Length: 210
Image 1 (tube, rainbow, N blue to C red):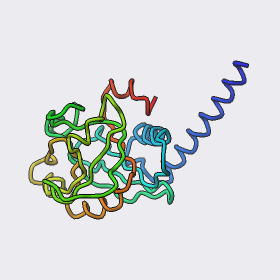
Image 2: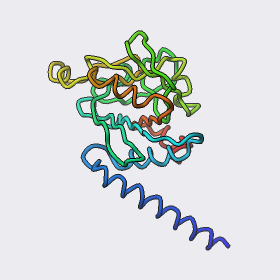
Image 3: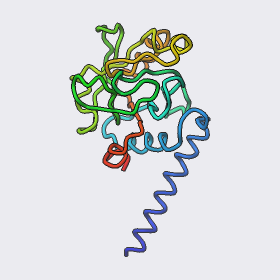
C-alpha cells in the first residue's frame, strides 16, 4: 500500500513539475525570473480556492531594484504581458530587499500570496489597487496597512540612472507611472499576486509553497 501511494505521489509530482517547467520555458523566463520563484508562484496559486484566476503577478524581490522584477502572466493564454520595475519598502533595504514584515508602520514589504481588490480607487498615491494578504503570519495586515499597487515616478529606469537605485515606498509595490493605470485595470477583480524574497522563515513556514 505504501509503495502504491509513493508511486502515485511521484507520478503527480513529475506531472506538476513537467507542466511548470514547460510553462517556464514557453514564457521565456530564464533571464527574467529565477525558476524556484516561478515554481513557488505556480504551486501557491494552485492552492488558492475560489474563482478561476487568469492573471498571476510575480514580484521577485530576490533581485535588486535596478532590474525589472514585476511580471504579469496570463495563465489562460500562457503569455507574459508585463515585465517592469517595482519598488520595495524603504525599511526593507536599499538596492536589495532583505527585511520583510507584516507589522503596521514597519515600512517594509510583505512576502507571500495576495489577491487584488475588486475595484481600483484614487488615494494618497493616485490611481491605486489594494492587496488582500492571504498568509496570516506574513501579509495578513496588508489591507489595513493600505498596501497597494500604484504608479510612481521613482519606479523608473530614469530614476535608477540618476540615483543608482530605485526609489522606495512605505511598503507598497510601486511601478512605473506610464504603466500603472493599464496594469491596475487589468489586475483588478481578484487576480493573484506573489511577492518572493530571500527569507528563510517564509520559505520554511509558508503553507502555500510547502
